[in-house]
Amino acid sequence: MEEIFDIFLLEALINGLLFGGVLALLSLGLNLICGVIDVVWICYAELVMFGMYAMFWLYGVYEVPIILAAIMSIALIAMMGLAVHYLIISPILGKPPINQLLATGGLLFFLQSFATLLWSIEYRNIGVRLSVLQFGELYLSYARLLAFGVAIVGMIALLLFLNQTFMGSAIWAISQDREIMMLMGVDTKKVYAVTSLVGCGLAGLAACLLVLQYDIHPFIGLSFGPITFIICVLGGLGNMLGGFVAAFILSEIISVGGLYSELEWGCAFVFFIVMMFLRPQGLLGKKS
Amino acid sequence: MLEVRGLNAGYGTFQALFDISLDVSAGEAVSVIGPNGAGKTILLRAISGMIPLKSGTLKMEGCDLSTVKPHEIVELGIAHVPENRRLFPAMTLDENLKMGAFAKSARGHLAERREFVYSLFPRLKERRDQLAGTMSGGEQQMCAIGRALMSKPKLLLMDEPSAGLAPVIVQQVFELIRRIRAEGLTVLIVEQNVQQVLQVVDRAYLLESGSLADSGNAADLMQSETIRKAYMGI
Image 1: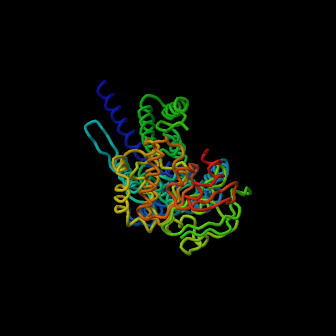
Image 2 (image 1 turned 90 degrees about the horizontal axis):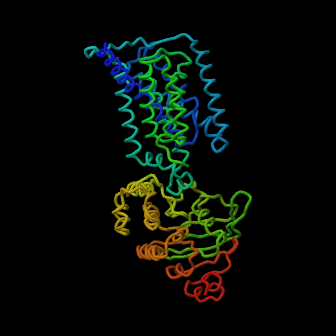
């Protein structure tokens, strides 16, 4: 009895780690946008939903090769993010934050309803079922391993982009001092556009990974949106390293918590609320 | 090199500068002196495009600055060392310098300009991997000047380089300005430390409540009764 119990715990720990990779990817994208543009995209996870539908239509229905379908979906979501930036975010930059919350919150309901209208609330999946890896008593799904691996590669690519290019440096710098960016010859509007493109491209990548594990429906964004947002706040809004750490902590709490009770999400929220009292600036955030 | 004619500017409806005209010729070092709140910082901000003009013209080597976008002014050879240094505190010194070379015309020269800045200020080379926010005031000022030099400017605008520094560091900063001048750069420097700045520049303008009150050679102004009384406390 004792031995089997340990296997379950180990499995939960590993699954938590694997799920944390995808959550970290999502929160990195949202954090990037929050930190650089200083706007909270409440509707960020709805882009993931559209990305999953893109995969469904391209791969599941039109039978585009899966890698090509993934690249097309990522590009599509990145462009969609750029469109949202220009049409909705850009006109209300510099306005009181409540306007931005209302606008992106409104967009969330619009996108959900729009998807319902187009594709109904029917659950769909792309019909890929990856097998399960067995290590003795330990069962691990290939879909999760793949998602974790690709998410890590995606994050390393992002880090290289941020550290090696001039645009990447500008993205780091802009949240530290917005006003003097023009003295460096930086067009802040262009940095905002690139950030929206990259941040939403990450949402597209996450969609390609999540579609292997979850059924698609218009409200699937609600499964990832709130937790992504909580991760960003827990890590310190705009603090990418904080978000990365917070993603793994929360996914472990959910995964291991699920082993002992039905209230795994409750455990995560309680942890979040307690941490907000202890460190309101976020895990790695600085006091302001 | 820089030609300012009939400049009126301010923040919103508040006008801070009235009909300013001044010139800076190639190779010259010119200072704008005056009391707190006279509009010295706004003058530099107007030149580098940080605030819009109400009227007047600004020309850099004959090119009208109103014809280019604010962030493109750097490409014309104007670099601005802002008030309070304004480094990126969470980035290393090296990364701060890299940001200074962001302009398209400067990107190709990144390595070469970095070596130039390090040869001019050897102290910076020792600190290259240190976070800018953790450096001393003097080092930060050095870094801010170095960052501005990264864009290979012809004209360097400096806003109160000695502000907030200990007296012994102030001496070092003025020594840096001499070194920059020796490299053949044209400098326009705004200062409250009148006595010191008049020793490193050729000419100066006196700005009082948004208007130019006086101008002349540094040596002559140093002898002027009014300036000695009002700004040097002699």
